[in-house]
Length: 612
Image (cartoon, rainbow, N blue to C red):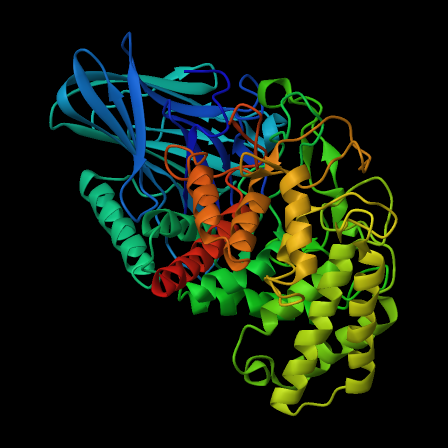
C-alpha cells in the first residue's frame, strides 16, 4: 500500500448522495457521509497518518494490481495477481433512493478468488471530521462479526459476511482471511448518525441481491443514453461520472468529489470542490439533455429556480456563485492545519471563500440552462417568469461592473471579457424566451443591454495588437474561457475574428493539444505557483476546432486527450507537465466538456465524410 498513490490511481463509486474513492491498491481513502460536502470518515488521500483509510489488499510479495469498472456501471473491481492466485475486491454503494435523503450510507466490499488461493489483509482506520475527532471501538455486538466506531456525530459500523475474523488494533480493526478459488467473503461499512440503530447483519444472499440491484440500476440508467457515436464507451463513462457527482434528492451536481487536491504538487491552489457551482452545473444541462437525460437536466433547473426564490445574497446579487447541495449559501473557508495534504501539498482547505465573489458570468449560464427547455413558461410558471425577468432587470443595471471572473482569481476585479460574453447570453436567451412565450418583459431595455455588450466586447474585448479577443479590457493576455464564444452563439465559428483568436490561442495557450487557462505570469491571479493544463479547456478546444472547419485536427487532439484519462476513464481538473493528473478528482466540468466535444466532433466528421 502506497502512502500517496497518484491522484489518477483511483476509481469512483457512489450512491447519488455521497461517494468514495478506491485506489488501485484496494484502499478506500476518501469517503464523506452523509453527503458529498459532509466531514470525512476516510481522508487518507489528504493525510495518510491522520486522515484514515480502509484497505483491503493481498498479503503477498510481488503483487500486480489491475482495476476496472464492470461495463456501463459504477461497480469497481480491483484485481490482485500473485504467484499463488488471483483475487478481486468488488466495491459498490447501494442506491437506496434517488429523491429521498437516506439516514445511512453503505459501501459493500466483496472479496473473492478466481484462481488459486489469496490471503487478504484488511485494515479499517476511520478518522472522523477530517481527522479532528477521536472515536471509540466496540467489538462486542451481540456476538455478530462486526465492529462499531463511535464518533461524536456519526457512528460507523463494519460488518463481516463470511470467515473474516475482525480483531482490535487499538481503536481500529484489522483482519486476515484466506480464500480459495470460488470462495467469497465481504465486509460492509455503514455510516449513520450517532445514536442510530445498528444496521441489520448482512448475509451472503443480501450482498448478492445488493450487487444485482446496483448492476441493474446502472444498466437501466445508461440505457436511456441516446448517444451512438464514435466514442460511446468514454461518453457513457463520463455520463455515469456526472450522475455519480449529482446529489439526487435535490438534483444539484457538485464540481468534484474531493477537496484539497493540488493543482501543483506542493502548491497552494488546493480548493474544496464539493459544492454546486451555478456555472458548472448550468453548462451540464445541455450535455445531459443532448444525451437524452432530461430528468437530470430538469431536476437541476428546479434546484436553480429555487435559488431565485431564496432572496439573493447579502451584497444584493440575485445569485451566489456556488451553494451546498441543499441550497445552503454558507461555505466559510478554513484551513485544516493538522493535515499535511496529498504528498505534502498544504494548505488543505475546507469550505470555499470564493462563494462570496462577484462573478457576473453566472447569470448567463443560469439563463442558458433554463432556456434549454422547450417551454420555459410551462417549466417555471408565471411566478417563476417574474423572478426570471427581475434577474434580467437587475443585470441591466449591473452587467458593466468589474468582477473576479470565471477562474475565481484572488488578484482583484477586472472587466473580464468572458463575464461580458455570458451577460450577453443572458439577455439574448431572455429576449428569445420572452418573445417565443409572449411573456411580459422590458424588451427595449434588454435589447439595448444585449447590443451594448456586443459592441463593447468587439471594441474593448478585441485587441488589435494581439489580433484576438483577450482576457479582460486592460490586458493583451489570452484566456481559454473564450473558447465558449462560438458554442453560445456569440460569434460564428468561421468568423475571421474568431479564427484569429483560435490561432493566437494555438500559439500561446496550446501545448501538444493541451490547453492552459491563461498565463498567470502575464496576468497575476494573486496566488503563488503554477498549474497544469486545464482539461476542460482542452476539450473546449476540440469543440472549437471541429466547429471551425478543422475536424481532422480536432479528432487528433481529442484522441490524444483521451490518452490522459486514467485507467478507468476518469479525469481530474488538470494535466501536469509529465502527463500526471492534478487537482480535484474526478471533475464534472471536464467530463461534461468531453461529452460536448464528442457530440460536436461526430457531427463534423459525418458532414466532412458526406462532402467527401
